[in-house]
Length: 368
Ligand code: AOF
Ligand code: ZN
Image (cartoon, rainbow, N blue to C red; front, side, top):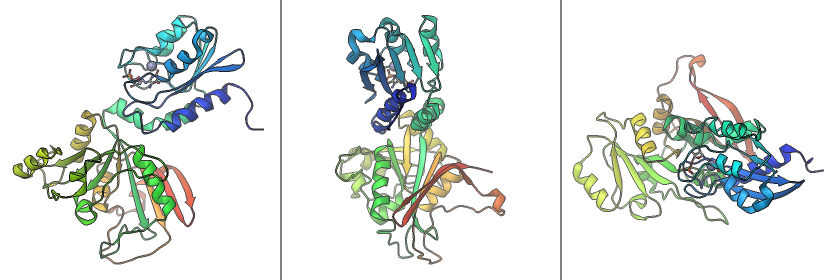
């Protein structure tokens, strides 16, 4: 039988709805809500877009009068603050719901337990923690951004078994199989920004857009790391208008080039006066512009620099069963190596997935 009807059954549905909205809520979390009255579902809601109604509001609107005395399942603590929308906890109190089951607390410092307190103080039964790990995992990006102001950074690489992301000639089409490449487009849909180094733009002239098979995806903001503004003015990311493009550069970059880019709608952000873009500063600047998550698609030196700067939250590595060799062929992570294995960066919470003859290994980096 597929599922016993209990609290978990309804919370899992709320989480399923939230899961499907990943990528479309901007810096907001994904949240689902189910209202149950007298043994039947009477309201369903999902937060779909920042600036529009929260999950609880949709679900309560659907429930109407039946909200009174109901049990409400919600994947994130109902908010207690006036943001772009009014507080959900006040709405739940007004509707006279009986019981609220919450998967996890809202880490937003403006909420952080206050929503739950408000509900309890007005006599509503509140239970917290059901499927909490799953809810937190779904909102990793939101949690990072709302607590630090920095974007959540996922680095994705596609390499041969010997870690090469291209042959010595620079040829890289294709390393991984179609299933792996399709997943990458879903990853793009689920991040607000996509970041590459300027060498990738010069070598491949990519569009960096989301191209799903059989569905339309959301395009992330394109972020190019380019310390000297070497980006060709005719490159696709500058010209095609498919998504905004932002260039991270340094004080050393040419003013006229920056002006020329501005004229065609491309913003440049100067991050430090060093030889390379100050990546921490860059992340702060992107955070200020409300870019709460970034998918980095290399190359190896950018990946290596981000790893050394400890700016990576998750690494997703696709491997194809090939060995291309060549001492000058670029590798997935290029960085000053550790002397001892004990000093290597490790991944924890590792997940593996087999995709035909390719394999995906992902996890959170931990530094020695
Ligand atoms: C909820 N239910 O469905 C969501 C919540 O600017 P606003 O009004 O959209 O508020 C955004 C904040 O509200 C966000 O940072 C998070 O703390 C909470 N999101 N809360 O009760 C929802 N999306
Ligand atoms: Zn709310």
